[in-house]
Amino acid sequence: MPNHAEYWNSTLETLDPSRTRDLQFLKFKRLLARSYENSRLYRRKYDAAGLTPADVRTWDDVAKVPLLTKDDYRCQGKDPFPYGDTLCVPLEDVTVFHQTSGTTGTPVYQPDTWADWEWWSECWATIMWAQGFRPSDRLFLPFGYNIFVAYWAGHYAAEKIGCEVVPGGVLGTRERLMKMKELAVTAFMATPTYVLGMAETARKDLGIDPREFGIQKILCAGEPGALVPSTKARMQEAWGCKVCDHVGATEVGAWSFECSHQPGGLHINEALFLVELLALDSDTPVTEPGVPGRIVITSLDRVAQPCIRFDTKDVSMWAADRCSCGRTWKILDKGVHGRVDHITKVKGVLFSPVTVEEVVRSFAELDGEFEVIVEKQGDLDSIRLRVETPPDLSAEGTAGLLTKLGSALRWKTQLNITIEPQPYGSLPRYEVKAKRFHDRRGK
Image 1 (cartoon, rainbow, N blue to C red):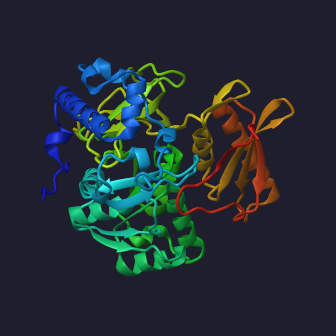
Image 2: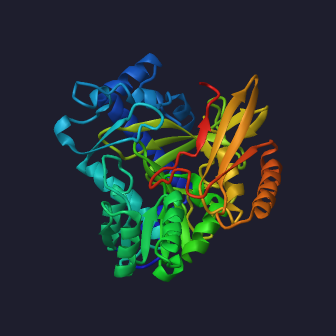
Image 3: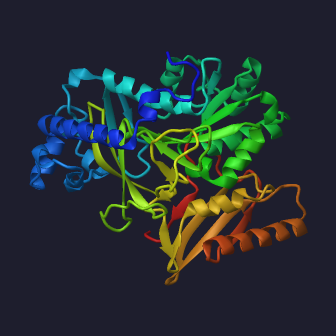
């Protein structure tokens, strides 16, 4: 058990970058050889590319290894059922099953061995320790446990570092808040949407200021909001504590985190993952800071269903500076900016829905939900923003508020966005990932 210092694993987290790079390359070569030997998916993929593990001799050779996509995972099937060609261990070695949400297509089945599950816990323990979680914390988990990995690994990592864990899966939002109050919990995990939704329910349904709960820290995942400055500020103001982000994926693992120093980006756990950035429209490496690129990830230590150069379709860019926390791992500036298929051109202008969230959340009066819809009107693109307006604001006040919102959106996006005010509480509420962006131009 480490002492109450800054790092969960000080050796790896402060390792000289050149030695970290050597460790990554050693692990990459080992993973490549094992996957080629044991996975029909990888053998078929690499044979088609004319590549063998022996061909990867230097760092430059890593770029020769074909990218993996979700479509590759979808070759899962009956032999052995249900994983098929993706499985890299005997079926009897699989001890836990999860799957992706299926929001971008057919769900991917994710097998893990017992060693994989220990690896998951170690990834999350690194994250939680960096965000200030300690054995003295009583941690509430306000979500239902399901076949999605979600915070399963977070639960076991919390136990691993010594936190007291309080599950709140079958409870409704009101009941969860009451249990949190009753037990004086000190921390919880949730999506940014649900963090704000819980605060809204506490104020409006229970008549309690969320700050009265005494929450000391909140861990967010599932959406970009925790690194959107206005959304982060709103959550921290509502609960009176620090809110830190984490990004992971079922197929990849828990690969990045924001530490308690809040550097404005995500640390990459470079001891356990290799993260590359490639150009948005090609496979050219992006190495300089401040240039957006697609995030490509290799999970260096996963066994049952290896993940080698997985193109996440998420977008970020390298930060120019290291963090004041002392970790030597690279940082992705402003975290994940969105998905390639969400960052799109509208009227010839590059548009990201995250930018709309940043603007909307900067207006304290707009504490409800919103939706962004991109569609065709004739031959032209159009953007509509459906946003809930305050119920106690006069017609004149609402008109003034929406005028200011429209101006802020035009300045930030360089686009004209039609604003459609909605009654407060009329748009969907979400407990896990919110679905606020709808691009209907392809329909």
